[in-house]
Length: 312
Ligand SMILES: NC(=O)c1ccc[n+]([C@@H]2O[C@H](COP(=O)([O-])OP(=O)(O)OC[C@H]3O[C@@H](n4cnc5c(N)ncnc54)[C@H](O)[C@@H]3O)[C@@H](O)[C@H]2O)c1
Image (cartoon, rainbow, N blue to C red; front, side, top):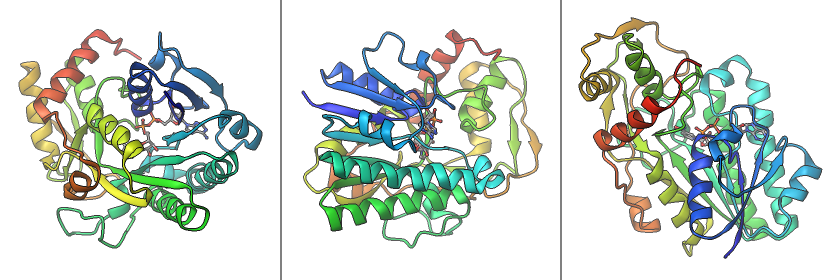
């Protein structure tokens, strides 16, 4: 049994990870300012709460006491916010990550697993995306995640703090907040369809994404915590399959037995055109293999959404 700190543990992905870690018998502490996360995401899960801002040094010190493993998910996880408030985004995502690494080093933490992002690739037209491609972030959010990766490697090289960076592609699943304008396209579409409203596609709908189910992302985190090599390695974590936004709207309609033709709105600034992961490095290095295909993951997500209050 080990003690884990999950920053952003009250959020969508973090809460799934916390549940799994607790289920495996570990002690889990959550550091979260509840800006987008919710305590309700961990209802009934025996975690230790440290409520506050990642950038608060005293709080970080307390949160890291007797911790061996950190999974760092706290971030402003939105391209749109980063475009509207770039300084705020960098403060939390870059300076916050640096503060965490520094505090972890001082506290004698063994390993930090960092929630990086496919946003690192930006509009690089090469497909699929491979980790060795030069980062070309197209938004302040993407840049903040690349900076976090570099800091992780530097902390491994210079200070010997073990780090692993996981570049998530488009993560979806239960507890992704469908009432937030920044949630993933799946929860936004599904919410509208469940309310009998047509999905709204931003752009022409031919943009494509690699949608990865949240439990597969949890699998990657567990493996990253155990793998031998942890010197700032970067791994794509996706499904390895590409789906256009139009196809997604069609599949969700099909799964819900609906036939609501999508409406179209202007494309969002900073959005990338195509995003598909080559996951072979994660397969070889971590033993990562996604288990959930899109239809199965969507089915589970819709089941949860049907039982959740969608009016919020
Ligand atoms: N969801 C995706 O598709 C996706 C893709 C790539 C990367 N990521 C990364 O994965 C991580 C988790 O994303 P998510 O989708 O679960 O988002 P989320 O917004 O649900 O989770 C982020 C959590 O961080 C907390 N937080 C934000 N700022 C904080 C601060 N200053 N101090 C303490 N806590 C703070 C929030 O309250 C929230 O609980 C993020 O780092 C995000 O950038 C997510």
